[in-house]
Length: 185
Figure: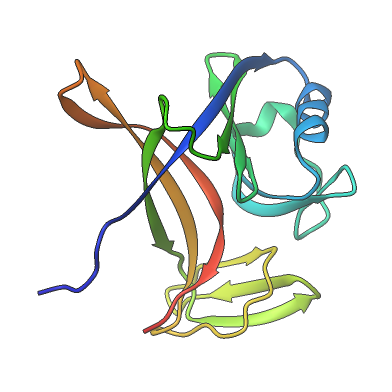
């Protein structure tokens, strides 16, 4: 029998939704809500991780994110996430902030660690690690990995929020990226 246990926690929350018409509006929202953050961008031609510091988005290849190429984007830190997605010809956004429990209308969430591809790692530049897999996948993350192999993977921590239909049936209603963590036995 597995000794792994489903980890859950509770928090209060604030959620703000909006529509973006330009990359400048996205940048302004990031500037207003984050000091430092990690970025995951799913673009029309690729997926990439990046980081946000000093009011600048930095990607591994020093490229810029074009508004028309964004399909999904997650800007996150341990306490909040700005999730952006394409809906028809516009980009929608949801800013979710986790706050301390209040005892009133708190929401429960599941804490999970998603194992990322990559059993070999090398440091390209300080604070960035390129992960490789024998199957050919290679990508760079803004995280200084100490050790990566088959028994010690890099993981992405995710909070998945639980809602209730008619106060009876539990269902996942939202999720957000939290940060990287190093796994291991």
